Length: 81
Image (tube, rainbow, N blue to C red; front, side):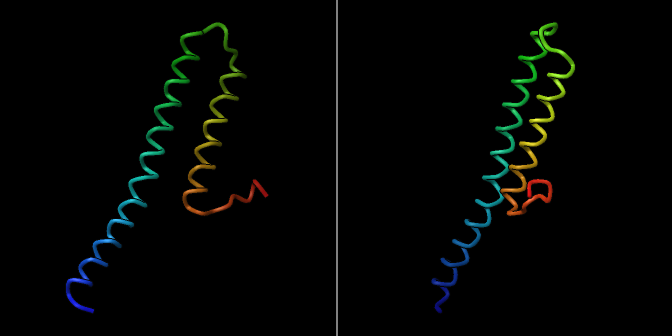
């Protein structure tokens, strides 16, 4: 390979690796912002939400993060089998 071809291939590989790092991070930040908005909405309602409902909601968010991270990493949790 010539030096120019090597530089082009190396640049493409770096772009792919950068994309694999940045895109999942953006998804997690967006999901975190959505979760914060939802928790704020629940807290504003106050008396309409029981502790059990809040716990169920927060547990659901936690499970969603676990599922998203597992999918991004290509891992399957033993609990889902």
